[in-house]
Length: 404
View: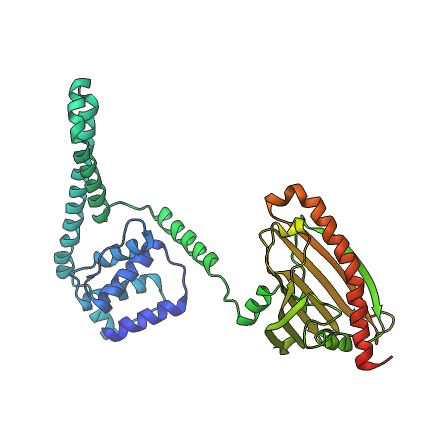
């Protein structure tokens, strides 16, 4: 019998026929009874309709022997798959043991009747208590108020008994439509696993451009901030290659610091460096520490001796683009100051470099709102005065390295 049972299960799986929900549950219950025996697991909660329906189908077969379950399974497969034929000996073995089936039938029915009776008695008791409370005169109802905790306890016990009885009927359409929705929700929750490289790019604001000249390329982007005040926009040409410009950029300040060209710069520390071999690029993060010589108006709110900035740079060697993004690390609760520059090969002279640079500030502290315009004016004037000197010094250092 085991052979024909296994063959029936295999052919049913291979046939991929459309089965009704009732047939699916019946096949599941018989298969579990034939392979695992009587159901010993606790019934799932009423709030899990799929697992509960499977458990009920399996539990209804309790008391059926392994051969009896296999025989019923084979007979059901023969009705569902007309093309499935058992051998003569297998057909004889697949004959239904009616006496055993009839003897085993009343047991699940008795269990269902007892669970129904228990659940309805619990509900009836709770309803009776509510009715008595509502129909009593007001003066007697006040005295009955002392029994409210007992009433709520009885109601809670009734609900628990009802749920644990597993006797709530579930319509077929509701049961399987709920299953479909649950599966859909599970699919939506299953988010794709992010690779370590993708997490690194996202963390540092690096995006992938799929339309690069030589394939996908990395782009260092400026975060979107519609409330920021932008100023100091500059377009310039450097008569040296992008590679030369980027190489000198990291070494433009002479050691030991401070460099006379930037007397406020106290130290530079490399925090992170990573070679992105997949895209032919190099990312570097540095910490720049400056002495704080802000005017008294600003020092009232930012009184530290040093101000720290984080500098992120990305050199795209394949596409010959160099990005530099500088942002204040200190006093971000007061405001955010950002400088962004893009060095790329000049469109007309590929051995030259085209520079686009600008700065922006966003005052985030409400305590500075009254001085916002004055602070923005001071920062923009200071930047527009010193940024050209910084660019000129960078060009001077490139000339010192590579000549005229």
